[in-house]
Image (tube, rainbow, N blue to C red; front, side):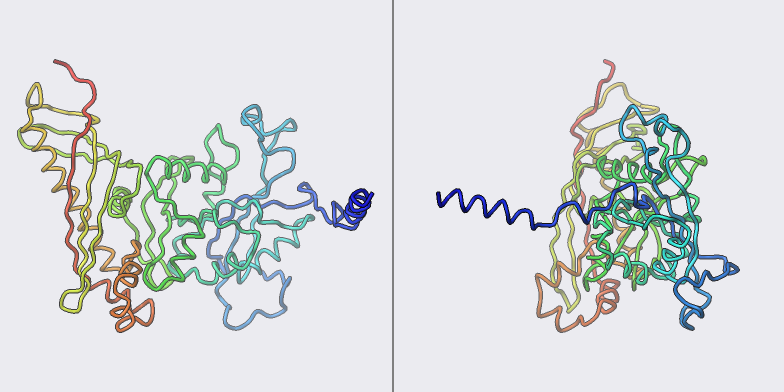
Length: 401
């Protein structure tokens, strides 16, 4: 009897719990899937949604936001809908452009133009122009970091052209440009073409004294293709330079990130011209303090396979030929690795996090020399590096006798 009474009380208490009364239907939200941020031309009129007169500190610093808003019922939900965009046809997203003096100011202006409340819960891609990145991204990140709707797994990208142009790029089989961008970056990550660097990782590096931020650097080719052009390097909260595409592979090799995904096109004397692809990477890092300056030794090991052979000078490879190929590739890769590190030192940008490793291994040295992030960036430019590289050919594919 007592157990029945307790069960009845528990059921009665459940009636007092909040249920679906505070729900908000997805179709009653303006779901922003992708966003592009550019510098505004400056001749747009103020909408006065958040102010009558803008604060003096932001005059002349307008930005333009291009947002892709999902249209309910038209977003493809599976393979059967991928070609048609839903039964009603038409574009699955609505592209809206607004300006403002900040992210929130522009989004408030956006809200004045749409009926449903805006929502960032499905925002997966944010593209900023290089002009914005070189100006500094602290203000942008402040808004996105404070907004609980923004996922830490959202991608933040830098474009070498106007960012809003990427909101209209999609191949024939992909109707939503922002989802095409998302798919392109995530598949590049799976193939070993780019490290896992979401906006959450960017914020972590931004707040760290011993590491600088970096982002994917992209462009457009042939009007409907996205090119992963390199890594956008940051120092002091703003973009200071970018790498070449093959230097993405150099970064991942120095960090020992897998799977391997980059190839090297080399000509080996007395052997021929070959293309070799890395499929496995290993890296060992040793940090020492010598003459009161950090000395970092990195040993990189790459497992490769022969993908292609051109103008061969012999019918078959001997053990000596394989060793010549490995040695020549070691010299070539070591030169790329050293050049990449040298360029980051010139930019005073440490995307590797060597400063964090130094702080963990030598805390007294760190506390004595480093007070701010700029202190480490200056010390990183003076750090000495020794790079060693070992390369092994594990596979060569089919060949004729």
